[in-house]
Image (cartoon, rainbow, N blue to C red; front, side):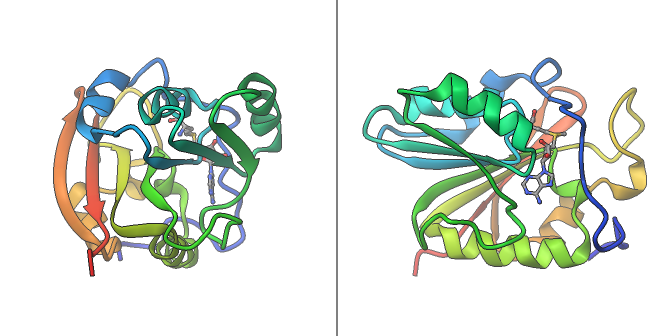
Length: 191
Ligand SMILES: C[S@@+](CC[C@H](N)C(=O)[O-])C[C@H]1O[C@@H](n2cnc3c(N)ncnc32)[C@H](O)[C@@H]1O
């Protein structure tokens, strides 16, 4: 992997920062092709604005999980999600969650993984591989590794190439999302 991005044990907390106003969610959704009946996890969901979009696409036959270590964000989301197919809960995607093995079609993370330490990245990959169905997908949205008016320090950002090195799944597509972001999609092996 690239240099160590964070000291072990240091908390990655964004104080409620959301990408909602700076990302084109329609561009992301168009490239995710979520089908009715699919089961999707928004990991590091923050205010859950994408989980709500995923729920519209996966429909009544599908399910959406929204996970974040920030209990306050999850409390707010839970209150709004009653009666929908979104289940929001406090959790950490770098550790084993309470979701079942091979239960997910898609895991989505937006501006989350640049904060992981190497140890957290290991735990993250282990959990992603446990959770995805064969052929399931991991979609990672990150800010480009170049000067921007906002975003984390350059040295902790991932370039798409660095992301491919760090994530031991098959990369299937790389899409520019506006000027400052990209989305890279990976696939779990089918066999
Ligand atoms: C910059 S915010 C992005 C929130 C949301 N994905 C968005 O695009 O608006 C990063 C989020 O990742 C969450 N996070 C940090 N470490 C995490 C971990 N180990 N597992 C899951 N979520 C984590 C934070 O609590 C925060 O809500």
